[in-house]
Image (cartoon, rainbow, N blue to C red; front, side, top):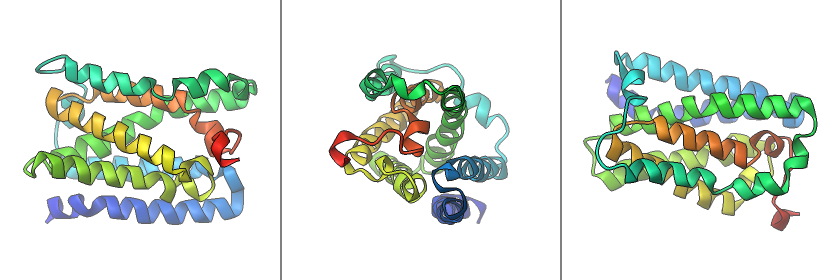
Length: 211
C-alpha cells in the first residue's frame, strides 16, 4: 500500500504545491517563490523520509558504476542554459538577488533529484525503462508551469518545457545507467544557475520571444 501511494505521490505534490503557489501569489506576488520552495522541498523531503529506506541518500550520492559516458551525459545538459546567464549577468547586480540565486541553486537540486530521479525512479524500477523515464520526466516537467508558472512567465514557456523534458530524461537515464545521482545533482545545480532561476521567478528575466 505504501509503495502504491508513493507511486501516486507526484499528483499530491503537484496539487498541494499548486494550491500553495496560488495562495502565496495572491499575498506576495512574484515573491511567492520563497514559501512555495519551502513547501515543495518539505513535501518532497517528507515523502523521501516516509519511504524509510535506510541508506538511500548515501546510495544516491555514491560513486558511479558502469561507463563514464552516462555521467558525462548528465553533466553536459547542465551547460544548456549557460548562454542565458552570460547574456543577462547584470540581473544579479542586486546583492539580495545574488544570494538568493546561489542559495536556491545549492538547495533545490538535492530535493528535486532525490525525489523525481531517486525516489520515483527507484519505485518504477520494475517498469519498462521507457515507462519509468516518461512517468517521472513528464510529471517533473509539469511541475514547472503548475507551481512556478503561477507567477513566473518564463516557466509557462513551451520552449522551456521542451528543454525540461530533455534534461529530465537525460538525468533519469544517467541515474539508471550509473546508479548515482551525484552528477545529475551537479548538472541540475548548473541549470538553476544558468537559467537564472530566481530572476526568472521574479520576472526580471523573461525570454525575448515572450516579450
